[in-house]
Length: 281
Length: 104
Image 1 (spheres, one colour):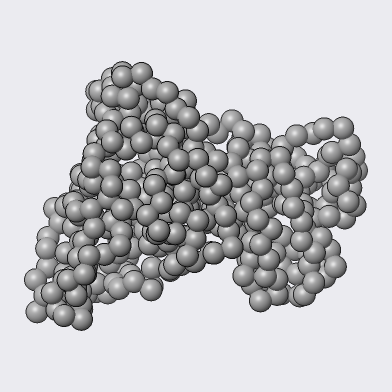
Image 2: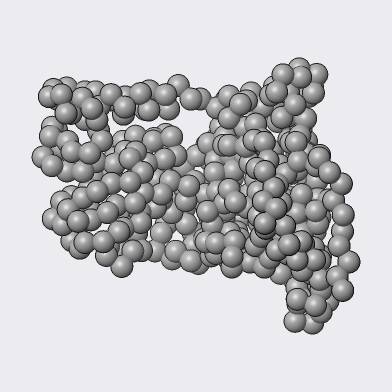
């Protein structure tokens, strides 16, 4: 091998060898420190916060962003499907409006690629999940989460294979997957990318931070509890060409089932500062 | 990255065993390696899925609009560069693995 080729090979070996060793350990999921506050952007963010709570932005003046994206619930709500400002039941479950800077594409079908398409972007960019007991455990406090949650995390990153789509500190790859839920006619990402078999019935992977605050689950709100979610994945459900290859048959003992369910509430965060609700003028 | 017989380089130009002078992009660990690539009109880019997940390769850039479909681990696909400019390549399944190709 000539010398100039070695210049390319050695860094590649280092990077890829490092990648091969980088299996999903707790530190891969630890919430990073929040970036320093940009004081120059503070006025825009403050205006965005007020707009987020102002119902006058809706056509009928009946709903605000915060009507469905409650900061106290990690930016989501607790209904299967909300009503829009016209009183019509919406097609899909509310997605959390936190950690959106980690999502290359927005909404369940990914039809928006920039936060700037949503109002108010500057404020939404600042919404980040709080530090959770899981983060404290990763940081060295062995008492922060219980044995069941620890076992659940081991399953999550191990045999259960959840981290295949739920990696990183948001517990989401930001990708689009058909998990095999019954077909309700909602093509999800498939409506935006009709020629892709894998995008049919595929929806964006939402993050799992604060997930325990946000029942029911799935894009149609069809699974009422986290237990039902784990049941769904363990069942293997509907195999079809569009189903994600990561979805595989999974047999769980009752103890393992409970452990996975116990792990998820450990991701409920607590904000460093109390959130103050603005009063629109 | 595997170093099978005759395979030395998986970044940039590869001589053996793929077609000589192919530019090779490896999809691994939910990312592309390299993340930016410079090529020339007429050159061919080969995408090699060395990940544990199925990936897609597509672009909607004016210089090159293509969709190679999904590739399971171990599969490859390629595209020839026809026009100068910048091509943004992505995986439809995993949007967090962008690749930029500058075509000279």
